[in-house]
Length: 627
Image 1: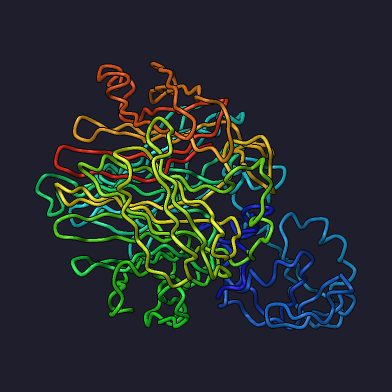
Image 2 (image 1 turned 180 degrees about the vertical axis):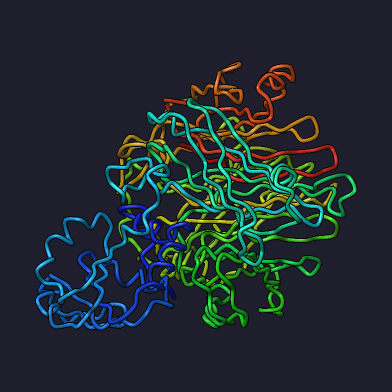
C-alpha cells in the first residue's frame, strides 16, 4: 500500500496529495530528483517526505533526513530515522532538499545551518505555473487542485461522453478553463489541451468521438485527467459519464450506460463489485492514478467477508489502464456474491463493465472506509430523528422492469448489516416493509422489490435481531428490462434526510454546516435518439413539509434559463421527470446538447437518479450529483 494520505473524512481531500500527484507536478518532481547529484540531505519541516518518496521510489539515496521538531527526532520517516536539524551542518551534503512548497522563508531560516557550499532546492521547483492556479497567493489551496479522472474510451464500437456544468459560478466563480490530458491504455500521453468554460452556470461536454476526430487519434481506452482552473467553492470536478455505441454498425449497438464522477482521492479498498452471473463477463478497469507503477501482487480481489484475497500477478504502469476479468481471479464466484477490491491507494474509484449478450454496461465501485467503527448511539437515536439513516432508490415500473437491491458492506469494520426495506408509492404512502435480517459481511442477498408498481424504496437500520451500525449504509441497485434484457445499475450510501434536528454531520449540506435542507441537482439532457429522465425522491427521516416546492430550470449551454416548471413531490414520495415532456422538444433544441436541467428546492433535500432511454430498450441509470 502506498504510504500516502489521500482523504480525511473530517477535513476532506488532502490537497498535498493532489499537489504531488498532478501529472505535471509528478513529471517535474521526477526530473528534479534525477538531477540531484552528490550527497543529498532532506529537510522535512512539514512531514511531506514520506508521501513524496512513496510516490517517487526512484529518488536517489539521502545521507539523512532532518527535522526541527524535537518530538519528531528518532521517528522513522520514508525509511530514515529523523535527525535533529542542528546536525545538518555535519551531514556532508552537497544538496539540501527542502520538502516543502512556498519554501523561501524556510530556506532563509536554515541558511546558517547548511554544510559548506551546499545548494538548496525545494518543491517550489515543481509547482504548477501561476496560469494554472486559482489562487496564486497560496499554493496549497485546495481550489488550485480542482481535479479528477474519468474513464475515457473511443474504441471497439463504444464511445464516452462526459457532461457537467460550471457549478463553480454559484460560489462566485467566473470563467473556468479546463486543462485536460488524455492517457492511453499504456499510460502514454495521447493529447494535452485546454477547454474554456464561460462564466455563469453554463453546461459543457467532452465527447470521445469529437476528441478523437479533432486530434486525429487512434482508437483508445484510457483515462482523462481534468483540472479546473478558476474554481470556487468545490475542489472536485463532478460529472456524469455516458458510455454509448459509436454508431449503428457497432457490435454493441444497443448498449447504453452511465456512471458517476471518479471520487478524486484513492482509497485502500473499494466494495460493491458484483460477481458475474453465468451468462455475464465482469471486467474491472484498473487505472493507475499515479506516475508510480503498481507492482505485481499489490492489487487483490476477495470475496466480501472471505478474507482470502487473490493478488493480481501483473504490474500496472504509470497512468496505465488494465482490464481484469474477475472470473480469472476468482473463478468459482457467481452473483449474488460480492467482491472487495484491495487497491492500496493506487487509483481513484475504479469502473467495472459487465458484458451480457450484445449489451455492455458500466458502473463504479465505492470507497470502503477504513476509518470507521460501529457507532453504538445509532442503535437508539432520539425520536426527533425518526427513522434516522435512509438509503433511497427508485422502483421502476414493474410491468417492464425488475428492481433489485443488494446491501453492500462499505467499511472494513462492518461485520453485520441489520436492515429493513420500506417501500413507498409515488404519493408517499407506505406500501410494504420487509425485515432483511442481521446480514453478515459475507451475505449474498439480492432482493427483488415487487411490492409497489412504481415509486421508491428505502433501506433503513433495524436492530430487532441485534447488530451494529456506523451510518455508512450502502447498496447496489440493479434494474433489468424484462423485454430487451438490458440492465443498468448504480450504488450509493445512506444519509439522514429532511429533519431540522442534526446528528454528527447529518443531514448533510452541500454548503455550510448541517442540516442540509435544500436541493441543487444536475440533470443532463439527451437527444432525439436518447431521452433523458430522472427519478426524484423526497425521502424523510421524520415528518417534514407535506410537499416539496421543486423548480425545474432548463438552462442552455450559455447558462441562460430557457424555461422553468414547478413540481410538487409528496413527502416520502417520488416522481419521474422527462425533460422533453415537461418542456417540449422546441425548448430542448433551444437549450442544445450541452444544456441541462437544474433541480432546485430550498425547502427540502431531494435525492435523485438520472439516465437516458432509447427505443431499442437501452437505458442508463445512476445517482445524480449536486452542488
